[in-house]
Image (tube, rainbow over all chains, first blue to last red; front, side):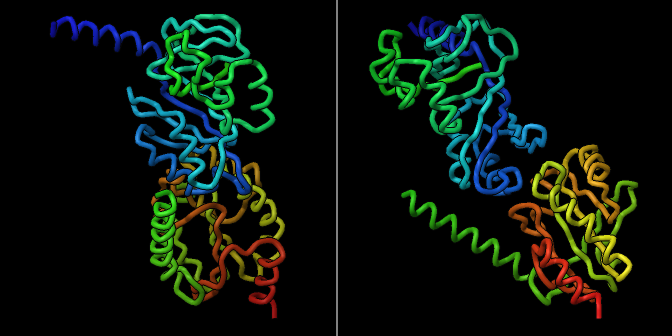
Length: 181
Length: 163
């Protein structure tokens, strides 16, 4: 019985580690230059799974490196930015993917999180790939309107699975991140 | 709970700032800074006693700092001969980005670099909350004012250097 559990646990881990996010590019918006504020830098560095934060002039954004093999809590990045008095203008996550099948308006489990891809071609993601979060609060209002119109499912408004993906086996209370490439 | 957290946070900030501002304020001696210039020579802030000095903290990736550089390129030649100097401290982690910005902005005043971006030692030492941050220091090495720009800075320089 123990052995069976172990095998099951291993199989589950293997299944859920089909992608690992390693870095992110975060653009913050606010009344003043976000990169010029030490408050926002400190807030991001305090996030437990963040290894380092670097201002990047080319994209007027922060380059974030995640701790190796750490689980990335995407909402925690947004909360850190908002606690420092700014908001997120764009968040792009880069990671290593292994045979992750995606299609437009489809839910996919990556790691331990649920993702809902919008405006993408059906494809299999392999190797280093970058996805952009388009949930409310991660993009400008205008962009959110554009992306949220790409699906009829209600989860795009709330970020919660609710009833829209029960058939995919996602519990109603689960967080669903809406993303694009 | 959130409110409590926020109050605690504000209290912390106040504590931290009161410690720093105990030293960095009008009439007090400016602490010395010794950092390397592009050619590797160490330049000391204290070596500029006898001049009115604008101590300017900046970085190449800071947009407002770059705009400020443009303003300073007009002001600097006007007052340099009268005893004005700019001691610019870049916190750029990327040395090449720093040097490139110096070329692009046509900077010909004193430039030193404490690499590390927001992790640079000088950030903690001076309690910098943001950049650009600048201090005007008089001929005796005492703080006169903070964050003077444009016309306000020019007025201060006129008062201090023209009689």
